[in-house]
Image (cartoon, rainbow, N blue to C red):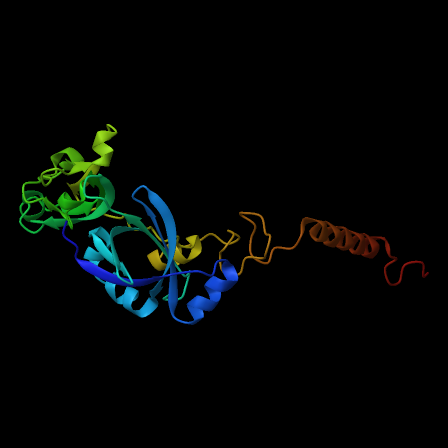
Length: 266
């Protein structure tokens, strides 16, 4: 069984959240090792060394060698807890590996041939990655670091499924074992977003087009706020016009009824 990375750890005796906080302040990472038909053990790892190893993608899909004192145990990484906003590893879980016992691991997908794909090169499509990793099950000796996905033969509107992947000997995909043949990648035409039509003010649009607006039309220059459509600009209210007509009639009648000069003189 080939191991790619070696981690130096120590057994952890103190338990509890308070102890974990103190250990993290000292640059340690709490961890647990379980499985392999043995009891779980709590461990401590150096944060700096662990962080450097985790920068390598292969670390997540390889058989690791955990060394505690004189003891060495093959294991795989099963879970990582990180701080929500700090660049800090909070806790890691390891599972013991036995040579004759199958394990389940998530391995990355490495896509190749995208630029040469007929759907991209000749038909103007774009390649979409539906999945970037998959869960596989196999014996530790057969565990691959990644699964190669060749998309060079994909045409426009074609979809590559899990069942289309070429797997190493002894490796099976968990989703396929459960009867779920999910898509992995596809080539489709790029989406064209429709341009939004700007909303133009009616009066401004008419003025720009050189169209005259009838006086009194809402939005026309000089129109009184709230004026009814068709009302002349500056028109007096109907009540005021009636009062002016009555006043003029009264003045005219008074002049006709007044005695003329010289009337009544003998």
